[in-house]
Amino acid sequence: MSHVSPLSAPLSAANIAQILDSTTADLSWQEAFYQDLHQHPELSHQEQRTARRIREQLEGMDCEVVSPIGGTGLVAIFRNGPGPTVLTRADFDALPVREDTGVDFAATNGCMHACGHDMHTTALLGACALLDAAREHWSGTFLALFQPAEETSDGAKTMLADSLVDRVPRPDVCLGQHVMPGPAGQVQIAPGPILAGCDSLRIRIPGRSAHASMPHNSIDPTFIAAMVVVRLQAIVGREVAPSDFFVISVGELHAGDKNNIIPDSAELVLNTRYYDPALAQRVYASLERMVRAECAASASPGEPTFEYFAHGEVTDNDPQAHARLAPVFVEVFGTDCVPAVPATASEDFCYLPQAWGVPYYFWLVGSTPEHRLDNPPVNHQADFLPDYAPTVAASTRAAAAATLSFLHATQPRTP
Image (cartoon, rainbow, N blue to C red; front, side, top):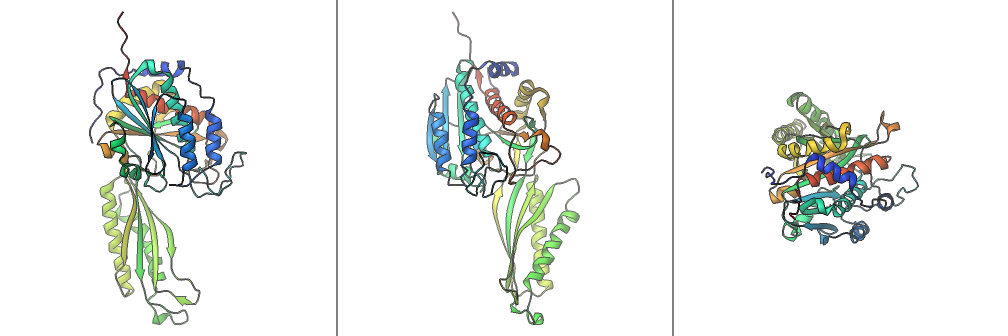
């Protein structure tokens, strides 16, 4: 991965903090906008209303909007003279979760912004307003990218397949953020891995069907699948070093559809998380060896099959980008800027900078109300709801501060 190019006239951390503190941008619309998005969640690749609301909010700003890209995606281009180009991204799809937050703006359509993407979108739009109002302080090009379908891990790829790299200026760096459990308003940063890589894996185990009263005439794939489930954790417990991180979870197990028939096949669907792709490949080799051995031990009539899908890259922050951003975030947030513990969740954000071959940086923002810190709801739970005021303030200022960190300062005019 390439590194951030040195800039001839970067804004200092103190400059950036002063810009954010002195801007006259009106952000009073944010709460109503956030509640509207929260109340009307849309699933991946179905976000027509959400995209329209984003475009409507951008209409009052001095930018060019390129849309649609990849279905419902869009990019707002803020051109402001010569200098670097910085891309900052927010996602905006929701999840098939029935909301249980009790707020008066809760969704009632069986879907929910249970991962905080409504907050990401509100914050990036707020950062757009801040930078638009502070044009006299910075020079360059700011790309605000609003991405659909993060939850299905293909939204970024869909935008790229729709010629994203040819339709907007090439960025010098890409930025992103995510709300997570933690004290609301706390900004969490780190170089290196910040989010895990992931894969899904479908395993099909062949058996031989028989009446449930005659198990000796069967080769029971349910039994084989059960042994596989047990032995999966032996791989993690005995083949992965305690100092390394690897998770295997069995999300689905299907076998049969009638109580008195031993089925002729079973299917497992797994999900994995890791920070080291090389370790993942070693684990997958062990996993396939073990599944084949269990099938052979029970005389399975055929070879098991393995289908890998829904791959997500490790989000691995560029160290030079961290060196640029860290002092800015410390200046802007003070003691509310803390070292991040890498999250075990995964993202598709890094496909965007990889497409251009540029460095990137991703950070986390705490969103848990103070009274829930002892047992915080986590992303994707039905009662996940960020503490609005501190979370929107921190995520808006973080998106704006990070973007300004890579733009040029305007040069004073000579009399």
